[in-house]
Length: 332
Image 1 (cartoon, one colour):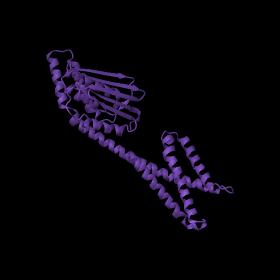
Image 2 (cartoon, rainbow, N blue to C red):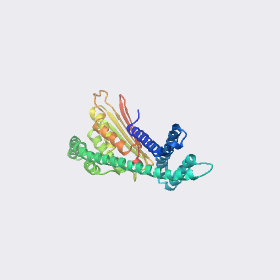
Image 3 (cartoon, rainbow, N blue to C red):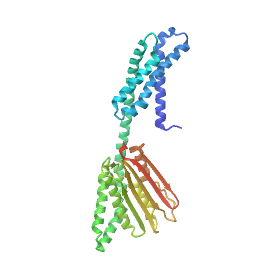
Image 4 (cartoon, rainbow, N blue to C red):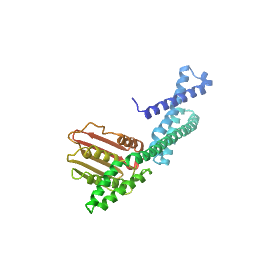
């Protein structure tokens, strides 16, 4: 019914409320005789617990995300003090004396501070866990890329293309050698980094497509375009290439028919929209389009850009279409 993180948050807060309510009841038990009835006693103590948790919940779920996390510290402090004072006034005000308001105010400052300490401790633990997972994923990516993504078959075909061009004394040979060199260097170096320049990632894709276009000869039309300002923007390395490799492998490479591959990158402010469209062979053998490469990139997207990406894949009879949008400023 609920996603795991949301379910854990709900259960944690229910547990915190029950603990606070129990402590308030036990703490006030010694003065239970001052109340008219057991109902009045329990109602007052539960109301006290609700007041405490209300301030903590407002702080944790509204004030901290909207103001503290956005570095609006002065406004955050004013609103927090205001919330505590308002709750103290509603719970402790008496027409004959303000002493109840003062007591409640300082008590809520104490409980809110305790709640904040627990909140930031839990956040620190979760942040550390996420960083550990990212480091583990980075190491896995390095190993997998060195073992699998540096494809010997692709390298063999690329070298054959270079050899063929050199036999023809083609003027393109130096450019092809340089493209292959850039590909291999980028693969090896980028796998050791957390982020790379978006410009470099797109240049890698362009070089990859140019080599594939030469290898596939005239039976595949490849289009590649970049729109917008990519300077200064960074992205996780090797995040886009699996989609391109997938288009080549399951499109042009799987048929001798005339085929097409279209790749475009559009940048607006800090948002990247990456689109790939490739034709599919008319006699398409049944295969798993979504292999290990795509599953890995989906996992990385969820980890690195958890609430800042959308991925839409349309696998129709004749075309395979991928639309990926990422807010590059939101990498965790």
